[in-house]
Amino acid sequence: MADLFQSHRYIAIEGPAGAGKSLVAEMLAEETGGRRIADKPGNQFLSRFQGGDRSAALPAQMWLLMSRYEQLCAAAEEHARCGHSTPLIADYILQRDKLFACLNLNSEELALYNRQYAHFREQLPSPDLVIYLQTSPQVLRRRLRARKLAREQRITMAYLERIVAAYEHFFFHYTTSDLLVINTDRINLAEGSPDLQLLLRRIAEPIRGRQYFLPFNDGSASVYRKILKAGRSAVAASAPALRQLTGRLIPGIFQVAERFSSASGEISRRKLTLASGSGPA
Image 1 (tube, helix red, strand yellow):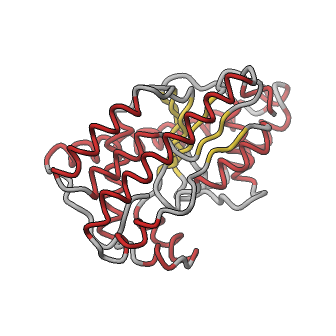
Image 2: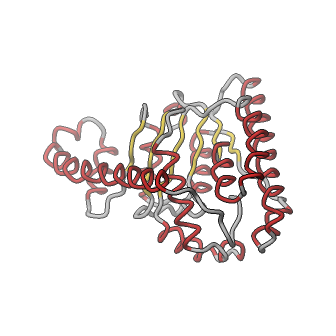
């Protein structure tokens, strides 16, 4: 499958904690032989902020910003030296850092942060393709509880709702690179699952501008998988099934677009409030 990704040499996976970024990035790196870029551990300020120490918010966010900048710079330099022979697969884009800074910093802290962010951002290349794993707050909460990580159990539903609204507002306006929106609410992202394999096949197909991958929960997935497996010879024989599949898919696309539009309007009407009981991610 590696040769199918030639048009996208730098791919970034985005979405809130619990959306499935790490698994998708790991599987993509394995399929393409690409280099994966993931957040470094060791942010000593983050646990303090998540524990309620408000004074740790700015240093926690600055630690993340500098760490991600250093990672992306080093990866871009190495990528250029290697002649772009394999893709870069990142678990984040730098703009993610600013998104959480807007949620977690007060106005004075944010002004200081923005000066450094702007300096870093202009020096980094943009991804060729961003994959946004769109997930509802309810599904995120369920997945975070299942992971049973202590720091994630402190994340409130109100904070998850603000995160999701901020993500959808951001990607509603995103035009920097090609974008694939994947709604993960009804997708089984377990390693080796049919849904994950189908998702990887979709990512390998040409993506230009903004496109969508939607889950199937009505038996349509089996039709689509058979068509993918059989290739072009199956298209003529599967024409009725394809028409039925398209009839179900198009309304779903409008539903996803409506979520984007709704989130964008809500953010425009009210300023994001500071988060409590959580931290940068």
